[in-house]
Image: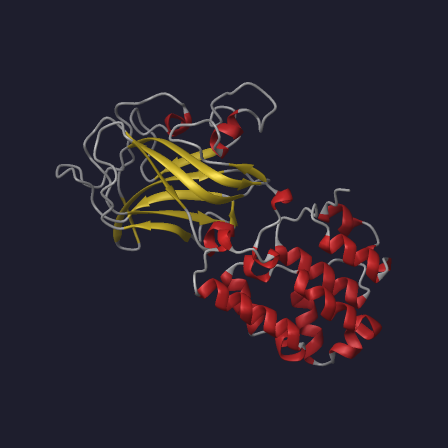
Length: 323
């Protein structure tokens, strides 16, 4: 049986007995868009609250109350269900908020689970090798788009071009499935649709701009309001120039404003030929964070002395778990 969290949340789930609710939370095919929603569902079920609020509501209520008053006879069940929230998959900033919360001060095992997750993230553990289910994302919630080789047809941007597997491929920028923007205005050689066109472009670059008092150049992708990707691999292709990138970051964002580094490149010598493909894995905790927006941003000059801040790529692809 396949459980969709949205369906679970829309029914009167607070009336479910502990066994049924626990089976839903633990079901291997439970579909969620974030572990925060699992946490919220457990807390609301524990309070017998029909409206689905966030943990912040519980945090406010518990300041002037006690867990025994909020959850009543369901308190022990809440204790038993909390370990099924995969806390290490929550954003680090959210974990820090939970660590400082009133819930942590009042519920001992909640505090332990949050602190364990923070330690796990801060230590940069190799999550992909960890067999503990609490450190693995629910793959049923996402379609796996796996990197096979440079320039393959397995990435999310190609997938968007097929209307997510429904039709023949069309450039996803033209079909408005995705949006690509650049640090300099569109022009003959700064053409967003080129990056996902599947055809080699001899001259393709975005120029520099000043941000926070520093030079930078970037290409950015918006997967769309309904979509997110946990990125674990990406590919770039140099255009026909010899302006080889050396220092840049791949970043992800939920809002297109606040960016998280997924991979940092400093004096990376990988690209050394015009037209060359190059791919890199994303490892560590950030590979399990879903983002809507992605960008590659230069943080240092290229090897071209004449135009050192032109970011010269003609192809971009992202891989991972797509929702």
